[in-house]
Image 1: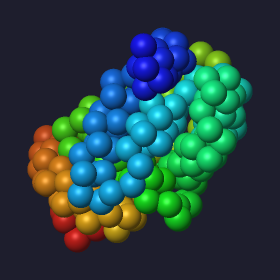
Image 2: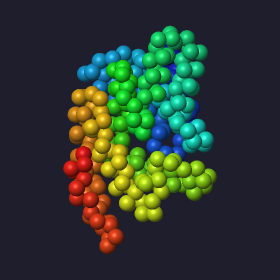
Image 3: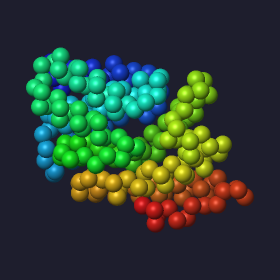
Image 4: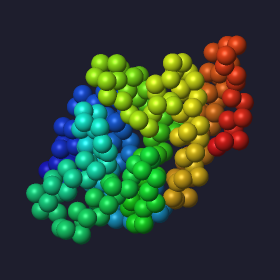
Length: 225
């Protein structure tokens, strides 16, 4: 078995039972997006695939202890790759990609591989899969707080509001609709443009169907993208 497949199996062990949207299917999609973007943008594909497979292996630890899963993932990835005999330069390149990938981290990566991983991870928050993941994640995080008391501080305005539809509206404006301006590559920007179309349509329909005296439709959403 080659290193890529060994890494895939290793990563899968960290995503078993992952309750929100960072499961192994997310990893597989991010890897596929990395490969698609790399065809046009360049970069070392081997480094990129390793980083994609390992970028979220610390997410369960974040759920359990708080903190930053990018840091946890980088530590786990470094140890795994060093034990596998990967050369130091490649290990460092993979770790750098992981450390800079997170949306909430607000980091601007310098290498093409890190820029592509960051773009691919953000693209998986867009489109039909982006809607599915956000709703799944909101439900899981609300339940996590209910059962354990652990909350994600950065999610207070979206996940934990009393009206989940209002929370979803805030999330869409906070994250998906701001992603295009934060992407690094032209290839990712083209993909994002297509994926955002379905998100705008969905949110417009959701607001029409759930409109009450206390909730005003967010008709300005197209201007925020």
